[in-house]
Image (cartoon, rainbow, N blue to C red):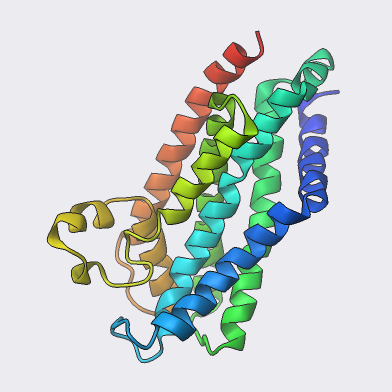
Length: 251
């Protein structure tokens, strides 16, 4: 089987594995929704975000949290493949590491875009009313897709590093909390001074601020380009490391 023909087959396999693992599927979909409801209804009244409705401020941060956490689960799936020995069977069919990992990344993008749509649906139900036009919506989904692909690729690399799926799952907790020290839920100016540098210069912040500006019809400046630069950098690092790690793990 050629690599081009194997790629969609492996992506379909990863999606079927996701559907069978209901615990992971429900967590990936319901956790961001629960975080959105938690911040809007329990913390929203106390948090000063500078917007009339806190849901308007919080939705972009929850979207990025949804995307990053769901993408990080790719690490567990890759580690499971290595532990179960299925990779050796693929190699006997002349399916290389690049094709296998591309299948996982593609499946991750599809399932996490579904989660993004679910978060948007709940947000609309509780009062989120963006003022974005068609071009801004397209740019929003393009940025979120780029972020999901980049995070899925680096997650696949982490899965190659981890010796067990349990070890790989530790990466999901790191990614889950990445949006918190950013502008996801409160303005950076309200944080302690020593945290400002990290909060402004980590990958989640330009993604969140770009999505927020696009959805609300506000000027975004060069933030989308900064966000895409982060995504491209993460993707390049993942591509460089994954090839080396895959060869070492499958000797």
